[in-house]
Amino acid sequence: MLIVSLTELMAGVKAPPKTVQLFQLTCWPMGHKVPTSTNSLVELMNMVERWRQRTEYGPVCVVSP
Image (cartoon, rainbow, N blue to C red):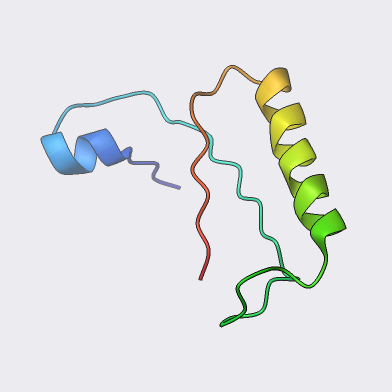
């Protein structure tokens, strides 16, 4: 297996690999302004915060379709 960092790909500089944790909220249908369950959104935010407290990783990036 070959692991290549984004830094190495973009700048040609070797860098230690980073871990990415992906959180996906599946109860927010495409085209809707709000999720079908606000409880799920709050739980997702709590999960992200717990993950941040357990790790030394930097900022969290949230994406949605």
